[in-house]
Length: 72
Picture 1 (cartoon, rainbow, N blue to C red):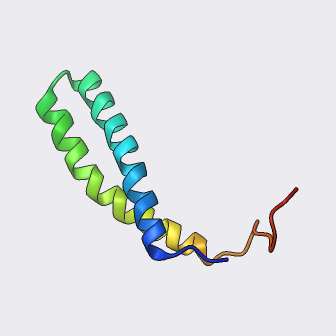
Picture 2 (cartoon, rainbow, N blue to C red):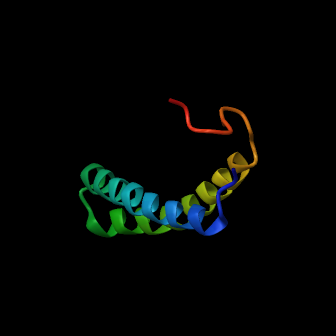
């Protein structure tokens, strides 16, 4: 069973919120500067969103580890 592209997009967006918040907090902690943390998080939110989406779409085509019916 293949995942629809809109499901992948929704998963990508929800994960980016979590991951970008993490990047922002870590960047702020390390640099002590909100502006730097915001800049780092602002850049990575876009680059990693596209990378994650592509990664998910490729894995959607791989049958390894998939079963035809739910495991019980």
